[in-house]
Image (cartoon, rainbow, N blue to C red; front, side, top):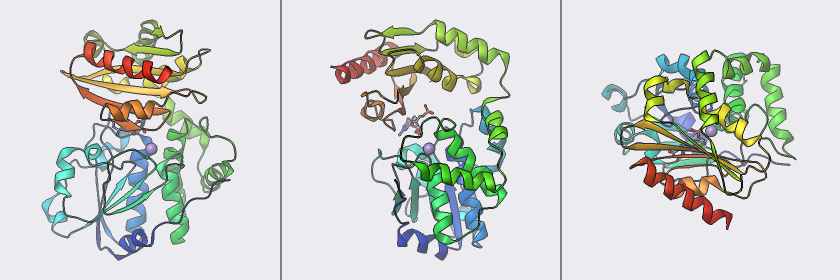
Amino acid sequence: MFTYPPVPKTAISALKGCTHAVVIGHVAPDGDCIHSELAMAWLLEHLGKEVFVANAGPFDRPEISYWQAFFKDTIPQSVLDEKPLVVVTDCSSRDRIGEALATQIEGLEVLVIDHHSAGASFGTIRYIVPQSYSTTLVIQHIFHTLGVEINEQVAQHLFFGFATDTGFFRFIGPHRGETLRMAAELVDAGVSPNDVYDDMTGGRSFDSIKYLARLIDRTEPMFDGKIMVSHETEEDVKEFDSAERPSDALYSALLSVKGVQAVVFFKLPAPGKVEIGFRGSHDSSVDVGGIAAALGGGGHKKAAGATVEGSYESIRKQVIDAIKKQLE
Ligand code: 5GP
Ligand code: MN
């Protein structure tokens, strides 16, 4: 059985002691990041603080686009003048919050709340629980520690992050009943898992499903089918909206193929840049987080990513070589 490590006393005093707070997450946020920020903002407001929420974006995942209006990509000087406590969620390295925000918060007290183990040391106070399936679960533990009741609004945020990072319960392993008990608490507070699933996966355009078909059709099995590699082309970028990139559906379809240990998806976020998404199968020995970290990215053993400058051909070769080494 797993129990959450105690919240550091320094983190509790920072949360209770500040008068102003800024909550930040990582670039290209996902459901865990955004809902961690929103739950922390709610908690800090509940504790009587003036709170400002920021995220560098882009908000290009359809399931979180609704929340974009609540976030700013820079912090006003008037807020910085108050010497706020900076709370960084779902991210534990400086480069992941975006250069502009990273520069703005220099010199301020930074509390990092996360479940990623990779990343250069960052923040003055860190509460990082790599065993936690989501950052929202870490935050749920902070609510418990502070004795703050989780109302339905907070429960909706916490459940969305949990559902995002557990692939809607699929990635939870044995002896982790605490995670299901924490999810049950949120359902008892009023969350409908049925509605959250629809919000996470629905509302897509027919085009995005056709794009998925194209990416699957283009997939190359490598190393005796252990690795599946797909990529988008410049034509795809022109034809399809990147906000509708069906990455998660691509990963789960390809990971369901017998013998597949990892899936690699090369994306073209901007000219001269290649973004690589990785997923490992649950029983695979391939550590995709390690490969991503070596490329300057990060993530977890089974889900990771990196953005690298250079040509698609050279980066692809670098990635395939790194995977080959791991398979040897
Ligand atoms: P996704 O493929 O859903 O964007 O990311 C999967 C996991 O890898 C997430 O935990 C995400 O935070 C992490 N990740 C993706 N891209 C990067 C990156 O460029 N740098 C770091 N440090 N982590 C990344
Ligand atoms: Mn996360």
